[in-house]
Amino acid sequence: MLDKARSLITPSARSNVPPFIVMDVMAAAARIEARGGRVVHMEVGQPAASAPKTARAAAKAALDRGDIGYTEALGIPALRARIARHYADTYGVTVEAERVVVTTGSSAGFILAFLSLFEPGDRVALASPGYPPYRHILTALGCEPVLIPISAQTRWSVTVDALLSAHRRKPLKGVLVASPANPTGTMMRPEDLAALVAAAEAEGIRFISDEIYHGLDYAFPAETAAKFSDNAVIINSFSKYFCMTGWRAGWMVVPDVLVRAVERLQQNLAISVPTLSQLAACAAFDGRDEMDAVKHGYEENRRILVEGLPGAGLTRFLPVDGAFYLYADVSRFTDDSLDFAKRMLEEAGVAATPGLDFDPVHGREFVRFSYAGSAADMHEAVERIGKWLRRVE
Ligand SMILES: Cc1ncc(COP(=O)(O)O)c(C=O)c1O
Image (cartoon, rainbow, N blue to C red; front, top):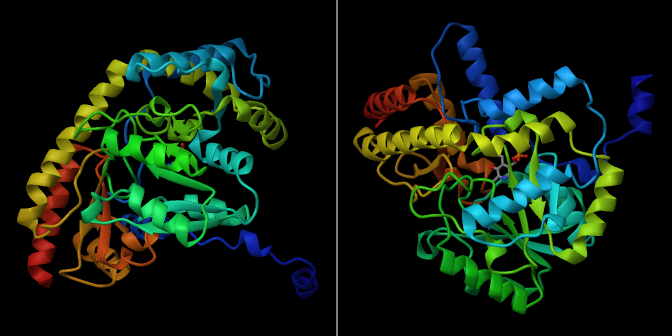
């Protein structure tokens, strides 16, 4: 029977996307904890804090009222207007509410952006290392991710030269950048972002800016690509700054000409974004003081790691500009970050993500630490890593 089913049903080639290695690290950490062991969790890019009180109160009130029906496909008008106001308040940029689309996390924003901008076979440039689902979603949709290696020479971001030379090798249809970025934690200077947006636009390359880590900027204020072009597609989320990962709420700002296409896609793919989450998201903007306090906690964590890790033996890491990631070069110890992360978990009790998740080429020499936990965890991690590296060196 099973054999018959196997011959009838095989997963499509496009569904054959690689798994998230970080999930394996989490499973291994859980096994250690089940045996009574202690693990400092620095593997997952998820805030430890809860959603703002304002958001939770709005959700409770909505539940008590009980009117949780579908909403407009583009999102509740009040939320779209509130998001538009956020651009005026935060960046001094006018964004019309009509261009704002509420999405099921930024993850759904990528699907809507790629479907509305690209045809199968289109080539889309991405920084490597980068967030794995960019390339996996593109591949599943039949597009071709074009990895542009980034390095210290380019301050770990895609430059105009790198973009144009990839475009000359074979034409690109799009480019996606993130600042602050995952896994690097680095940011693009506003003038570099402006130059890249202009260069892409001049060549007809569609620009997508993943701004999910905005609000978590420490080196300098993050700038939105919406400031530099009305043609850029902006993707953002309530998951990180607003600590609302599980609520699955995000948004896009799209060019006028894309609004109706995205609306039709959303109507068909999702009908609408969960109503409770949209109501909570609207109220989240009133909880900024609470979220700023959480951000100050990350800043303190960042200080503990930046000051402590060199003494522990991890002397080389990328500029720790924003988000809550520190990307450490471990090539002094290994050329197999998978094995390094496994041993660090088993022998030091510190869970981190091997760079291989983010970069198929150089990821063997890097490990990503998330510092979204507590300050006590950061101190403990530095101490544990130091003791372990002194033992294994
Ligand atoms: C760079 C980046 N973009 C997008 C996402 C997806 O987030 P969400 O779908 O929760 O908005 C993540 C999640 O870790 C991320 O790191």
